[in-house]
Amino acid sequence: MASDQSVLSTLREKLGTALVQLRYLPQVWSLVWTASRGWTVAWAVLLVVQGLIPVATVYLTRVLVDALVAAVASGLSWQSVSSVLWPAAFMGGALLLGEITSGALGLVREYQAELIQDGIAARIHDTSTSVDLAFYETPSYFDHLHRARNEAWYRPLKLVENAGTLAQSTITLLAMAVVLFRFSWWVPVVLIASTMPALFAVFRHAVRQHRSRLKHTPDERRTWYYDYQMTTALPAAELRLFSLGSYFKERYRTTRALLRTERLRLLKHRGRTEIGASIAALLGAAGCMAWMGWRTLNGALTLGELALFYAAFRQGQQMMRSLLGGIGDIYRNVLFLGDLFEFLGLKPGIVDPERSKELPLTLKSGIVFDNVTFAYPQSDRAVLRDFNLTIPSGQMVAIVGPNGSGKSTLLRLLCRLYDPQSGCVAFDGVDVRAFPIADLRKRITVLFQEPVHYSATVNQNLAFGDLDGNPGTAAIAGASRAAGLDPVVAALPDGYETLLGKWFEGGKELSVGEWQRVALARALLKDAPLILLDEPTSAMDSWAEADWMARLRSLIQGKTAVIITHRFTTAMRADIIHVMQGGAIVESGSHGALLAKGGLYATSWQSQMDLAASPP
View (cartoon, rainbow, N blue to C red):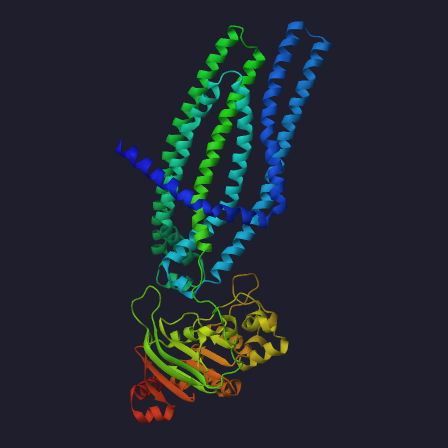
């Protein structure tokens, strides 16, 4: 008893949730209509036709059976046989029309599916490319994305199909109820009552399935993660060297076993409930048929009317179960649609100001970090606290310091990938939050510490640095020379048209240092007044570093450059060097001045020189 009350309580709770989430239905219909307007109209017309065909078939069954009985009673003759041919022909036509309609409806659904999937993918991509970088650092974002991406491809289309089934079943059921009502008022009541256990079964399974889905989303993502570690190139070397294959295979098997057990448990519960519902429906049909059989034996009904009743009642039961199943499916899909539209409803916090200011084409005075305090999402530790720094325009500024001191965070704040919790970052005395984001980022070019390896041609890899500028061959070649990439390109089989990476057939893989040169060239292609370079020489050998740094001065002439680096041989070429430790600037000055000071920079410099001079 307590268990039943718990199920009913959960059912009421989930029904309330479904009613709340009905607010998403207009968005679904808008999405479907926008993506496949013409096909949706065709789908609706075919549904109406398909909904009326069973009714025509039931009526033709009575006519055909009565004609057959009359023909047998009067003896075989052309007149008696001909009276059977027309109902048989109409019956065959109705069945043929049903098959044609069913095939056409399947084709229309396929077209709808393709268009709707593309429309949903576009919406997901719009959201995922516009949300703040902070979203990517929260597990809940990935849970939402996982459910949205996994369910989005088919849930809205399923909802449309459910609505179609609901409409078709309703049309047929109403017509069948009219047919059955002429036999007795209580027959339609029995028809409905005999199918109510099926409604309970559908709703109960939907509740269990959705609750399980929410609970096990992290486990599903873990299986994806383990699969990724075993099937992609990046972890492949360590996987073999450290013999991690067995570890990840075992984790994958264990997690999949957990998910499989849960799903089979749900199927077992569903199967038991559906069997009970089927028995209830069968008993209802048997009772009605016994009553109709008794009336036929007493001469109150003809055989044709008995056949009509049987066909109508069975069709009515099927339509009722289909109707209830459609309601259950709509309920289930509405529950899951919440995941999709919650994801699509994510809004970035870093947005353009309501009244923006015009950003100058070049920096005049420079950049100022004014009492900036910043902590990353999901962290209670401030990376920067009351941080102050001035970067004069037209100078090369190097920032050095140990890992975790906040160096790379400065670049992210400059690009407005994050905003500080307090204080401000100002360009020429104006808070960067006062400028349109797109304008701000057009004035900045960046090489991040871990640049992306795009599986595209060399030409495309470089052009990605300034697609809005539509760079030509000369500009791409110039950026390649500036980054010291041209010898690498010359050795490739198709030069700038060589496909890079191993994702696609014919791609050529580069070394880590060569990929870094590609990223450098991409950053230098953009003619921006502010250049931000995070570890630009970390993958270069000492000869390549010396060659590139010797040319950097001419490349940034008239621009402002900020270089984050661990290599003091790179930092020493800057106009001014800032040493960071614990989220604060602890020393500043030129290379010579810092050495003369004998502080942290001088100590670290001497350690690097001793290490370089020590014998192998």
